[in-house]
Image (cartoon, rainbow, N blue to C red; front, side, top):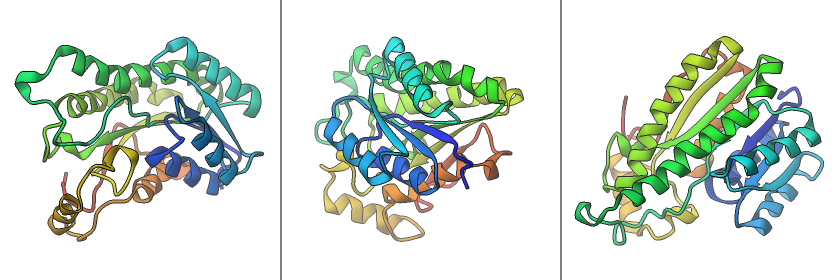
Length: 252
């Protein structure tokens, strides 16, 4: 049982984020669905969870003021925030054809992804910290990728930003642990299928399936289950970890 705990999921209107939000909803959590552009999709997720249990709030997670306002609205509705899932993906698509080669990359390509991964996560952590401190309880879960362990396709700027997010995760885990707050990362493989992976060809998905011990491609629901577990009291002794959910394609 969630004991009526409250979770905030960024980028929760579609793809992996919506599956994470719905997974928490099924567990009995109150769910705050953050979105940026996809208002109608966010409202649909609210409806699926239940309008008495979920709320959709628009905010650009790269903007500290917007995140602060979003958290204030969420606390006004549900009383507190216990779990944060930093899932939002900013301006990126897993397309090996359009991915820039090393000689074409600019520093701006990197900073865009660093802002999407690191700045946005810092904004949410800082915004929810007073609520978590007050309750001496918190679960922060950052969404990573298995690509920084095995860069099958060199998605340079995205993968580098997610690798940095692991450093962010472990430093936050060290500082916040004494407050009853755990901080972990969950890294999926290429998921079948989200908006970000919709251009991936069937041949690539088949190659991934053939290469993994489970002989299947990871689905958003698979990752959502692990995120949901890390948000519970049962995961109280797990912090500073990167849990890879990719059917054994990469092994730690």
